Amino acid sequence: MIPKPIIIDISEWQNPQEVNYDQLAQAIDGVIVRVQYGSNYVDKHYKTHIKAFKKRNIPVAVYAWVRGSSHSDMQQEAQDFYTRAKEFSPTFWWLDVEEQSMKDMRGGCEAYRKKLKDLGAKKVGVYVANHLYQTFNLDTEKFDGVWMPTYGKNSGEYNGANPTMTNAYDIHQYTSSGKLRGYNGDLDLNRIVRRDLAYFFRKDSQVPPKENKKNLEDIEMKTITTAAAKVKLRSSPKVGNNVIAELSKGAQVKINNIVFGDGFVWGVQPRSKGKKGYIDIGKSVAWIK
Image (tube, rainbow, N blue to C red; front, top):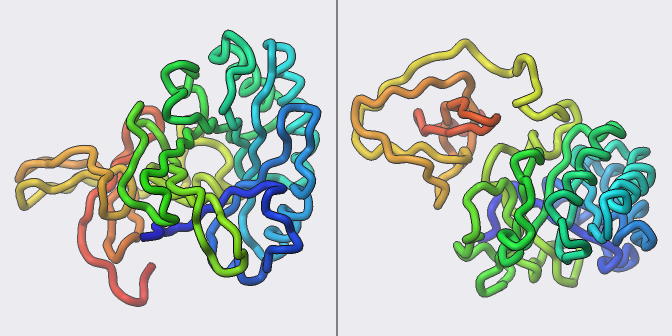
């Protein structure tokens, strides 16, 4: 299966001459475009990709492969990344951490993150491989999002193979062999595990919930009581392997918002560190999404 919303990440490996942007834009909900590989190598097609998708109203985030060899080098990479991408007002800035370019990767990546924030990037996330998660020991709590890959059979669809080093990730890159109309080659496909599409791709949602004084979308806090046993509280408003807890009959859950997903109405439970839980409170109807 290909979970929705559909997020792709692309780079110069996807040659614009081989992309039918009109068709591909119809197939996706958001795109993350590579801007650079370290400071000195600029992605050949990042501007073309970004302009093409923005023209078709596809929200764009950006990423940069991290190669800094010292704290100051990391800060310079952040400066170059910001300078190259700021004109496009990306919704999210991602550090792609896939090689050990310095001994203190934890401190180096924090220097990179902080520099981006100081320059004006509202949301900064980190992409880190499952098998490198423990080795790098990044301070992921300071980032606004965590993005991790695991492919399983890498069949082009999501097959239930998830990252194993942590459950605290927001986006899962589940295949590098994805196929979508508009491009004949392979694509990286991603699914949102925690939060929602708006958090990562909406222009007017740039400040993380933990930094907001007030979430203007919140409704007055309500308390609901479960009327059945084994009611599932989930990490996202969709059915699947995203269960936070099973609630017993008579359990009380405080919600401050409602959202729609997978044909259901979900109550949104505010949790610590800006996270949310979702509880199914009824079926949606055909004219509401």
